[in-house]
Length: 303
Image (cartoon, rainbow, N blue to C red):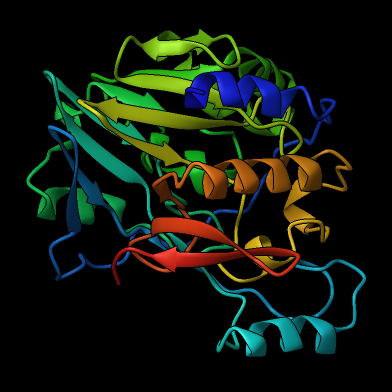
């Protein structure tokens, strides 16, 4: 079974649940450039780089991961995996090849809830100028994924790129007064796609993963006989999200659909040994999942 066909089966498991993107206050200007070269790897003939944008600090207070559960229960799951933090990384994905420079999500930039803003420095360290980007793929419209689309002056950060976003997500953005300025800035560049569409034939296919936002998408990137699944916000934390996929998280906005979608995608990934790129897992976010107990476990490829 191909990933695209399997994804259609996955979406049939759940019903769509809407979640309004959050509007966040402005933060200070972008921090200084990162020193290290971005992590580099291959997807078939394609060159890929994990671009570190920053991090999100998360408290174990029963309000974010495992909503309503005692912090001690969350801490026990973390400790059982040899970890003690709920903090998240932010690393958009850069992919080059077949005449295209593709960016998957754009980081947090100046949004107040994250310590972001390193994306452009990371990109330049990988040898790419923002003007060279031809295609941007937005998994969804939360601020830590679209924050880098515009600069401090409100202009487009990537002026020559088509911005691919699912039609339901684009409709939700247009209906949200808090995103009016962003919508106005990017509208001329937006190329809306149907959920699950093959966006760039043979290269990038959307995978509908319902419940996080109205049009949340993962993306399958293919080259030769190799594939990588960019999971967007299907999962957030590399321990809690995979070990306890049914636990509610704040970012899903109370959705009853998201946990089922999360478990279904993780099962698909484990059963098919899919190579994954997780934007919020520890840098560089590249690896696989395997079945473990009643849930799953993250097996990093690097880092």
